[in-house]
Image 1: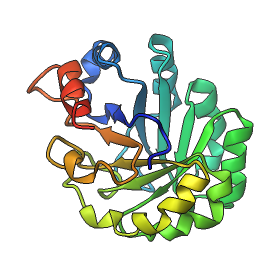
Image 2: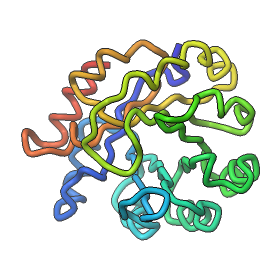
Image 3: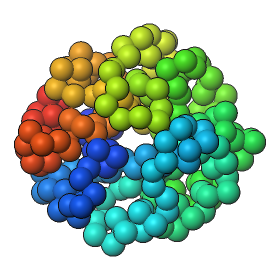
Length: 220
């Protein structure tokens, strides 16, 4: 059973039209969106570059939504405080980038944000079990981090049933990110996942973001 009472769609602004970012954010808000996903890439941990704290600060000026920052960066400890001060309510980090996973998670929480860990497709989900008592959220990557528009990798969920009781007992929100669309979402709903990150399925030229959001949300 999912931790959240109602599963959520978390639009990833990586796929948004940045010339119309404010309008696109307002569009999904009107459709009932409660959280935005922000992919932060540094060109080191992953090859691509994306956003920094200034974007979070700009988003916070136009919305009261929860903002989750997925830090795909090689030295998250140096920037966590900046992201929280800029408006991030959730900080997600990769364990391999932390000098001390426990210290990083605790620092995030001490700064007033929720803390989460990210598991990549080539990593075992069980790697997060020592940290369950420090976590608010688990992000399962169903594509390799760093690029949008990749195909969904279903094998990443093989270990979820075994870990699900521990995650639920610890009240850890389970989120999945990568290749989520109208085809893949129905195949994984009901598995205990609370939050589904969607980028190109929300922000595309086929329909306005609010329509895409509502269509995807209807599949939950």
